Image (tube, rainbow, N blue to C red):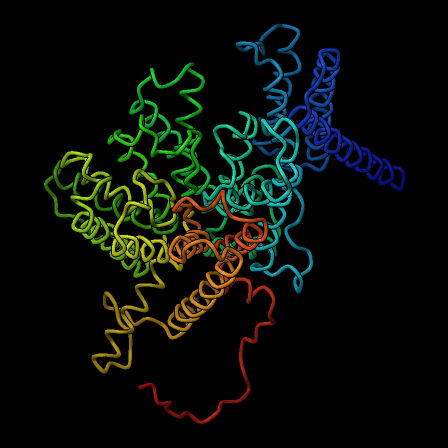
Length: 586
């Protein structure tokens, strides 16, 4: 019995040690492949190391499968599939099956990259309950990815010229916080590998690092502890029972919608704009991912304001729809999809059979209705106001009637944290600039890839104003009373954001005394709301201003309230209560 236990423990240690060695070597190899320019004599050795690490990864996966078999535990389908992929890569090389248009190395590199990510995802999420509360874990994950992204941007192969630490930090923060502000020219200063890294960073930042790690943990770990599920529930803002399915739905919905969006971007851009088919495909994928995640980055100089794109109205509508879907929030989108599915099924059944529709659950929540109503009002009113203010001005006057409507609608949608621009903000009137800044400040919806104070916060503040003006003691919407906790959070968010924005404008204005106040305020609003639109002063800012805007982007992405929650000890209940007294307001 003791010998059997010793053999089992020895096998576990061997597999664990092999896993650690493979992870370290894989990270080292990926850094060599991505960041350093290898001589021709090293290419063959790197290929051999690629192949050997895939074989080692297959051995580690096989060890895990055998251990489950000896324990009479069910085999995880995802791990079996992963092992089959490794076998295909191992035996496919001698047979020439992995030679795809000269890309024989990339399947192995992608496999190793995913292997490293999956193995890290196997780790328990937050062992220390006091230290790693959900808010702190969410904040720490962004800091970690920003640090890794900064280091990768400093590697030689990531850029066409050496980037300073400030430039790399600013670019990584802007990508992870899905802002879109840039102190470098993405089209000229980053290599194709650097652009791929940029896209990966704003994909991770848009959906959240914990979403991806939880997704891989669910699939390749097979199970998760109750503590992990509770943390995922708090981070994803869902119920405990649906945390796993919600994470899977988010990933599949995102990748599916981005793939469809990339296809439509590809179809809406002429092939003669690009030198190769691969460049056209990469442009489509990059902009679809950037739009859905509300990042606002572009691989072309001047972005969508480029002369070849600023009159491409089908492309604007495709990107605007991706921006709107990304800014609605996953919970809201899934909530409406369930309701539409029930409604469609019942009405189709009624049309076919002639029987009345059965009662189906009222799936649309108050939060969903509030988000949809606010989003529609902001989009339509923003478009209408911009049409009224900018119809005959220089930049808008170049378009026909349909073009003017398209451009103003796209600006209304993109100003709510997406960051793309098809007009020059320096040519806009002052009232139009103020409307854009208001749209930036409000931002998208909770649980989405967008930033800002969120549509629900803005809506609750507006409802409270009308309720107070009418003498009501309760705030109500759609037949429901809004809880006092929601109102307190909304006003805490607004107050903290206004204080921080005022401080930001003051600090940047003091650091850039020769820059007019309006562009500085516009830049700070854009950074805080993670929008990415600018009046052209980003690249001209000094080092201190850039570093301060890094802080502004980070605080805007994770929200000041989340930072306070992560740092302060929360008191659930108080054993006492003071007498109430009214305070004079006006």
